[in-house]
Image: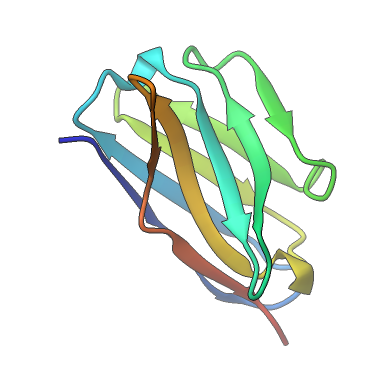
Length: 116
């Protein structure tokens, strides 16, 4: 069974940091590109970042470029998102996502709240 389980969210002050994790199971993790997307309250989904299967190609949305870092550990089958210099507008539910055997897969999401 394909599973993606996000963790690491929480409440942080502006300028703070969080590291999100996405534990993957039930598929050949290293074969697939992985992405982070987020949804702010009352807003639609926003793409945040992506990494290819090998882990040598990284892309970021303009709103997080220079502040967030995506990475993966294919031995541990875990995707990461290091979030630095957090802003209130980063407040959202963060999801890891992949298209696995032609089917879009999502985790349950983890809440990130940036507030003083």
